[in-house]
Length: 340
Image (cartoon, rainbow, N blue to C red; front, side):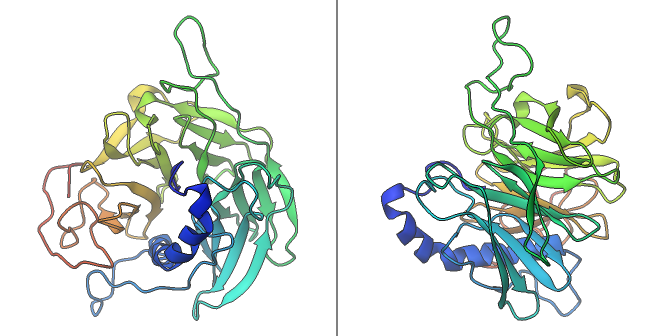
């Protein structure tokens, strides 16, 4: 998710045009992470290519999902959208990168801030889209039909002992909701990260009003806090990335998939170096966790073993275990859950 203030209003369209190629690289990385498996024997460390440039309108792609030979990406995931056109989901041909379809979001008030973020498919091929105004809507890619699925996420006041109690946000200041990533559990419930309110929401199967599932001050951030979210292959734990917390730490945490986890059950899985920005997550069939790194200097994908260590032979000079722009081949750390 692009942070507030990252695109100044007067230069927004210019920045969109000049950054679209870079964003296309990010899109390619994210698509790779979504489908991630160990590279073939003939592939070089750091292999990556541009799938397609994401159009400047809407620009700033975030969520990526793959189904039936198409790669879907949502945008614009940024602030400074007042007065610009609607958010959209773009579908690309997975083999050629050609644009296959475009789905403009219906019902947004474009004279106010509006954005799509992450997306996810259900078993019936329907696409669920997080939107800062609308909450969660469901899209039929075959017909283009859009329908509401879950209400907008509540704007929680900051928790203040004695004065402000639950429901509230465990953040030092009052911030608006920022729905960032979505994933479905085997029972049909959906889980959504809220990057500015240090919250994971649960949307019950069938939709409706989002409910607070878990909150923790370790998710709070002056920038982007809790970010990517995925369930492990067994469907027993929820993994989340925290891009940067109030102590400037970047981390991966996990929680048991239970009705109401406690703070004591929040387990540190991996801690990155200061300045690294873990973002989206995806599990490979091997059980390895693939982490899209949004850091400007180490953009790429970090691969973490089930014990939290970097995959052997995949560590780089910092934390991104491979990068499309570099090919350093340093040795991984042997510290459990520590830096690569």
